[in-house]
Amino acid sequence: MSMHLRYTACGRPVPVVCRAMELEVVEGNIAQLEVDAIANAANDHLWMGAGVAGAIKGAGGDEIEREAVAKGPIEIGDAVATGAGSLPAKHVIHGAVMGQDLRTDADLVRNTTRRTLEVAEELDARSLALPAFGTGVGGFPLEECAAIMVDVARAHEPGSLERVVFAVYGDEAEAAFRAALAE
Image (tube, rainbow, N blue to C red; front, side, top):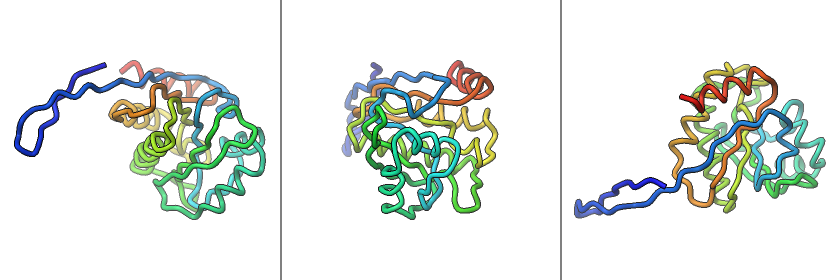
């Protein structure tokens, strides 16, 4: 825990205890993790095709996509939650990191990560797994993605969240996120 000062309207400092979240990296299939919520790198219409979305839908069932699509379309950078079907997780948070052009950028990665953390808090999730947003079909550079996502997670003031797992695929992604966490 760390101590910060917040200031009241009259300018008096008030100590506030802030809990730190545990941040970790796991290389593997996000759909198999035992966490409260997993994030899907989604498009704004919330259709679940290949990559992370395909792994989640394949392991958890078509009902995840049906529920997601019923909540869409959403703004790029926003996120919504659905049930998790037969996944070990309780929820899937669909972060719209790209539009129909399937492209993304640093601001969208940042906003989607932030919004996904907020939705996890709204669900009272204690643990959340995040993929490397936008690095698959979105074509976003892996090292830049890792730096942004780790920075956003570190800046997040947790309520219910105690643990955030960067669940990535492949040695290169694992190395990028481990390097970002080491900085």
